[in-house]
Image (tube, rainbow, N blue to C red; front, side, top):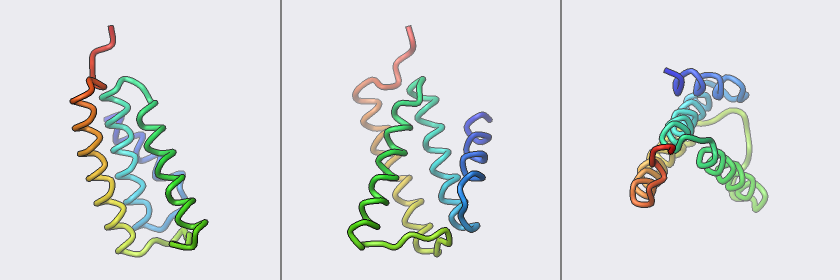
Length: 103
């Protein structure tokens, strides 16, 4: 329940349209999942920082424009990227014992 609640708050503080809110909510679910599984916010913070940096670089180099109104294709790309990232990071986490118990 805590993961969903923080994802709702995370999505609510971003100023996007309804499609953007969906994408940010799913990002919040992913961030919350990794916070829970790793017993800390470090991995989630790193993923969030990498996400924001990549968007910044895409805009800076003119590969994408920034807007608070997301289109359907932007939302689909974002959700698919988050799911792929979740799968990869979870696999890496299992292999490197990120999810070990706190001693």
